[in-house]
Image (cartoon, rainbow, N blue to C red; front, side, top):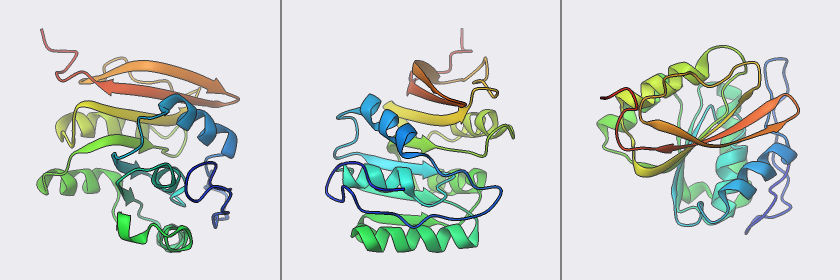
Amino acid sequence: MRIISGTSKGRKLTTLKGPFLRPTSDRVKESIFNILGENVEGKIILDLFAGTGNLGIEALSRGAKKAVFVERAREALRTIQNNLLQCGFFNQAEILPKDVSRAIGILEERGESFDLILMDPPYEQGWVERTILKLNNAPIYHEDSLLVIEHSRREPLPEKMGRWVLLKQRKIGDTLISILKCSGRSQEDP
C-alpha cells in the first residue's frame, strides 16, 4: 500500500493484518482519486471507517487542507497515527477513536462541515445504509459536498438516500465506487 500521487507520492504506508481487514487496494484508490480529480485540493476531508488512514492520507498528499479520521479499532488507530507521522501530515489531521455513528454525532455537535466524505465500511454488513441514514440526520456537510463510498457490488446503495444523489459509479472486480453529491434537500421530500 502506497501513496499514489501528491507531496508524499510513492511513500509506503503501514498496513494491518487480520481476517476482517480489507485495506483499499492501490487500484481502487487510484480510481477514486481519478474520478475526484481537482475536488480534493484545499478541501476538508472526513475519512469514515478509516482503517489505516489510506484514503484520507492520499487526500492530504493531493492537497486537502485537513482530514478527520474515524476509527475505533485500537491497532488501526496506532497505524493511522504512524502513517500520518511518516507522511508528515500529523498537524493537518485529527483522529476520532469512536464508532462511526457516535463520531458523526460528535462532529455535528461541534458544528463541523466537510467538503468530501470518504467511506470504506466493512463489506456486506449493512453499514452503507446505516451510515447514509446517520449522515442524513446529522448534516456535517454542505450543498456541494461529495460522499465517496467503497462497497461490495453485493451490497448496493439503498433506494432511499435522503439528501444524497448518485453521480457516478465504477465497478472494479467485487468493489463498487459510488460518488454521491448532496442535493441540499431530502429526495423523499415532496
